[in-house]
Amino acid sequence: MTLLPADLLAQARQTLDALAQRGLRFAAAESCTGGLVIAALTSLAGSSAVVQCGFVTYSNQAKAAMLGIAPGLIDAEGAVSEAVAKAMATGAIDRSDADVAVAITGIAGPGGGSAAKPVGLVHFAALRRGGDVIHHRQVFEGDRDAVRRQAAITALSLTIIAANS
Image (tube, rainbow, N blue to C red; front, top):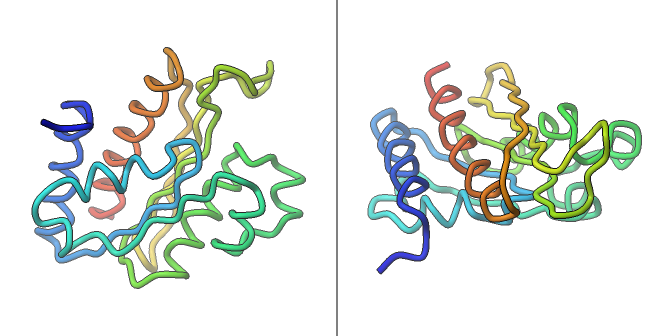
């Protein structure tokens, strides 16, 4: 029996294998996914050779305290923004021994959205240590669980792109 959806576990396996083949260590900075990326990876055999740590920074205060994000950046751009996603990924790399990091910040719903930032909006950032930050923005359909699941799958896919950069 597994607690996680098959599509998420399949993407986690692909990501874990890609990182392991390259000898890369991984960290995640998660907000709206609440640790789902790390949970998916660590549910798989072989994860201890790859996964270094996960930062679940759901609140703005946690983003500042755990990842070193300037509160002024969050105030200016909003927690769900390209700038904050990039700062989260950089913070995860800077505060770990990981070679690759991914960050996820979004609005899973059902409330909290606006015209400019609708429910389902998620910003992603990923980078390989010493490389450029890759940003991706997507608006997902579905309920809270569907948004979180799709966001975790997307983050894992983006991790492979960063690992190959």
